[in-house]
Length: 179
Image (cartoon, rainbow, N blue to C red; front, side, top):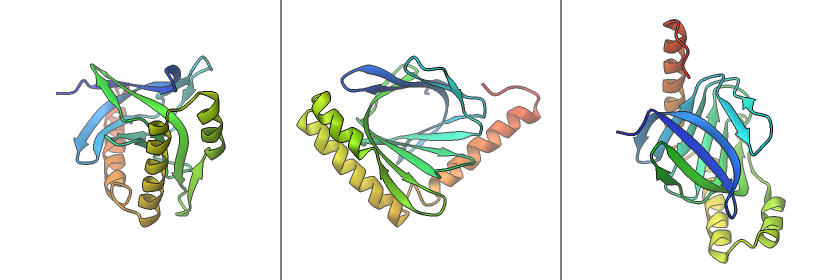
């Protein structure tokens, strides 16, 4: 049984701190591990001041080279970080963010983001060839999946997000904070 709380440890190549936050375990299925955070979940990038999520959010950690995040409200509908495959340890999942991101807006428009940052970091940080090829292949695969509205992007994620929203609502209704 996985721990209830999972520390999401996003790093930058080769191994510097990037985004850090705690999410709650929701489920695991053929798409990966589903984690969630209620409104008020705090996240911090490096040594910057923390931010607070305004709505329930859902994260899918896949065995592939990507991790997606959905929010209950706002844009985009889904934001996908292209990252190294996850490394799981007790209560923690660690991935190296590889700059490229793919987002689908609620209008259905799909965008690849941060290609310039990816190109710069290949030189500045000396990304190895396998990292570059893995990131590019994953970015193209995710972009195509989003454009074709393939699972888990079609209905599975929406159902998982609804499940997380319901759990967050139960915590509020019971008068207890969901941390």
